[in-house]
Length: 347
Ligand code: NAP
Ligand code: ZN
Ligand code: ZN
Image 1 (cartoon, rainbow, N blue to C red):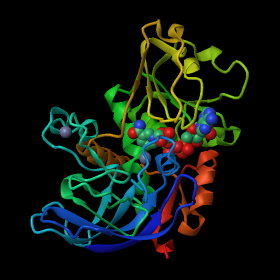
Image 2 (cartoon, rainbow, N blue to C red; image 1 turned 30 degrees about the horizontal axis):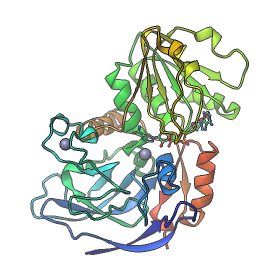
Image 3 (cartoon, helix red, strand yellow; image 1 turned 120 degrees about the vertical axis):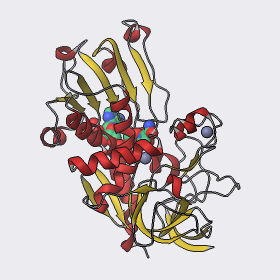
Image 4 (tube, protein in one colour; image 1 turned 90 degrees about the horizontal axis):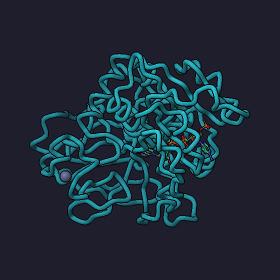
């Protein structure tokens, strides 16, 4: 077994604290990674504070994991010791169902997706994420990290990146399309960068006046401050696609009204409360849908796209001793635009 030190949430109401635990010794197809950086996703906070009602404690969060290969199993072919490697939100799935075979392991028909933390592996063991100094996973679920990108700023691509890249690709964001992004946080700023890189006319919606100028620099063709009176009127019925990245309860109807006929509002945000929709918001043949992360092959495609176009996340570095404070700042929308834990600060 591999002795591991990290931070765990022990209950919904206590601050994450130092915790010692073990990962399995690498099997023939496993890669053992020493973690260098781990992005802080709002999902870490939702789960640690049991806002989705599915928490298993002790919980070592972290699914934007980037590190260095320390050891490999005898049958590993994709990695060698010393390589950079990354792990996102999943570490296994059934691998035989139609979704898994299609490379959409996150939608495994057998509900056998094993998530990186707050989940159980095929042996029934609790999984532990990137807020700890080691991680072990089957090489099929480990990503290759492009050498030209800054490693700390690459970590958030493993969740915030793929979660926004996947629906933008699926609904063909590109030239001639008008795409909206709601919420300029970790996911939102990646949605904005990708939509801009794909060539869509991209409109950022934000509740924060302090983010308007940044949004333009990040690639927005237009920025709408939704705290201002009458903000929606100018854009009614004009969007092909809107990606909603908001982490808390908000009025989705205003955004459905901005869609064209057959337009799509895709929520990637996962607030704890149910979404309330007025029938009249969708009667104009509007689609409200959702999207969850992205498959392993598409995650590698996204990383390679980022390598080619020099796209990484805008980050603020965080240390373990300030973890609770940093989480509270994320909840307030006070981060530009993703916190990344430096594992060197772990003691
Ligand atoms: P984040 O960095 O906290 O960003 C959320 C943004 O939403 C904030 O920056 C803020 O943007 C806006 N916002 C927050 N509270 C709001 C409110 N009460 N009303 C309106 N806007 C509000 O979070 P994140 O890490 O990007 O994650 C966003 C959501 O996606 C979370 O719920 C997370 O769990 C979920 N998620 C889903 C997937 C998936 O697979 N579907 C993957 C990862 C995360 P402005 O300041 O610009 O308004
Ligand atoms: Zn995430
Ligand atoms: Zn499956």
